Amino acid sequence: MSLIVAFNSEVYQATSQQRLSYPAYYNIKVGFNADEAHNIVKECIDGVLGGEDYNQNNINQWTASIVEQSLTHLVKLGKAYKYIVTCAVVQRSAYGFHTASSCFWDTTSDGTCTVRWENRTMNCIVNVFAIAIVL
Image (cartoon, rainbow, N blue to C red):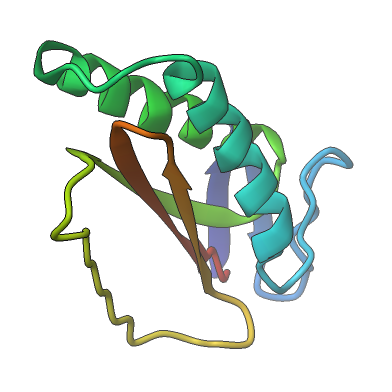
């Protein structure tokens, strides 16, 4: 039996008697580092929304930029994860903004990170879900 796996456009093959070897830059550490993800996402939010006031006409562009930049930076970490990134930006109001999520997964390797950001005119919530790639 042979196993063929592709990572970053490179193909690796191993028989059932061999261990699959990965390139040195591909970090196979188990366990999601929520602090590292939080810092990445916060920098992306600051870069997109920092200094801006709420403007309904810019929401689609802002949210798309935040999720795309966050995802790009997370993938560049080179860890064996699939990522899901969501972003919501709402105008600040007296009613607040509430979200919830639930996951059924392996808590020893998978993880989540939620970043809350606000200024005087808007609130932003970004969720990162990291699912370990297990071979």
